Amino acid sequence: MASKTKLVSAQTHESGMTLRVQLILLQALIVAVVTLIAGVTAGVIQAHTVRDAYEDRMLAVAQSIASMPVIRSAFQDEDPAATIQPLAETIRKASDLTYVVIANADGIRYSHPNPSRIGEKVSTDPSVPLSGQIYMGTQTGTLGPSWRVKVPIFADDSQVIGTVSVGILESQGDGEFAGNLFWIIGAMLAAVVLGMFGSAWVTAIIRRRIHRLEPHEITALVHNQETTLHGLSEGVITVDAHGTITLVNDAAARLLGTDAAALADRPAAEVLDDDLLSVLRDGEDAGRPVIVGDRVLVARGTGTSAGDEAEQATLLLRDHTELHDVVRRVEAADAIIAFRQRAGLPKGLSAETLERVSTALSAHPGCSAAELGEVLSISRVSARRYLEHLASTGRALRSLDYATKGRPGTRYRANEPIGTPPSPAAPDSPGTVSQIVRD
Image (tube, rainbow, N blue to C red; front, side, top):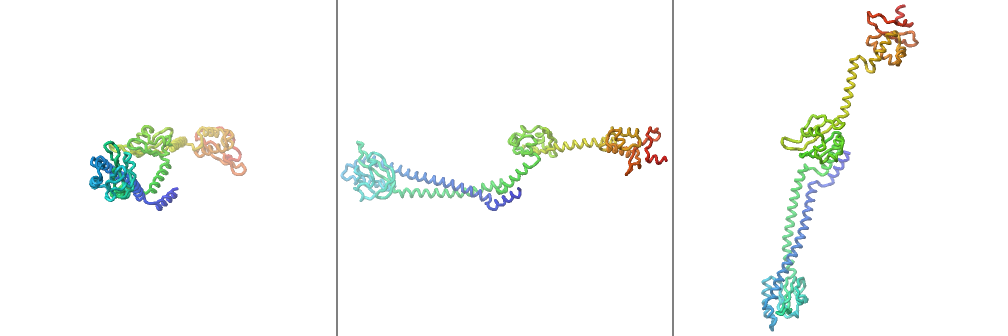
């Protein structure tokens, strides 16, 4: 698993860009897209703003001309153009407009930037202003496509007697918008450049925060931490400066008899008992035995404060239940061995049975292990072990019986101390060593 993880990480590192380049490119892309959207929006708004400003100015000029008494009275003259043309040109030049055209109800011009057009019929439809309404829009006239405003001229009796049409060439309005667009594009480019520098700065901060690690290295660290943390047999619990559990592994949850999800993000004081809280709070480097339920744990802690300031702390738990049971069994076995050593008996021998064998041997001297076993209703092997022990401790004597076929047999008799009257005994069996000695 570890080799496979290293292989995948190496492939990712070789085939992909570094984190620094990725962050800079991603942030630069975001800045560029946002700036482009903002620039396009600003351009559209600027285009509408320029046109609205021109239309408002043209409307104000047209309405002021239509309301001038000298203009309305000139419609009654024999040559209205003589009065209207000079006045219209003066207003046109002062207002920086492309044209100011004044016409009667039949559409005959009384003014025009090109004097030769005076007396001709207007080239666009005058029906809207002649109906008493105001027209604003784009039309193509003798001077080309233009933004224009047309307003009606009313007589004293509110009858429409003519129209005033003012406008500018569309190219003039587009030129002004293009000039504003230059500044918008410049601002967009400046924003992108500043965004690039900002991206590099943010990238540097982020990389310092993650210790200049690449994504594959971070992935490997997280994978190794998860594998190590949850593979430990030792329980690990980490709390922050506020006493809230921020990390708990599976071993800790198992030792405490609960789930890891039930411990995470919970105050330690609510889920840990007093002994564990004491170890966690005070710190314990050597380890302190703590009983939790039916388990014997050894707890070590780092302490939750440094001076007067609270800080993160870690509690380590190790299960010593099995070791405790082993120690108890060893202590019990040592006690039994010590008792047997004090009693002088090897393992497997009983003091009560030994006493019965010794008494029976005194009553039946010169018997074999099989014969003594029949007397005591124990096996020949058990009887032999007890007889051998008596012989090894000097409480019995061995003798060889050559009367048996094959290998000589062994017979035993109690070793009576000097001065003790001999116990009544059965006659020596033929063929024993003692009989040979008497003969």
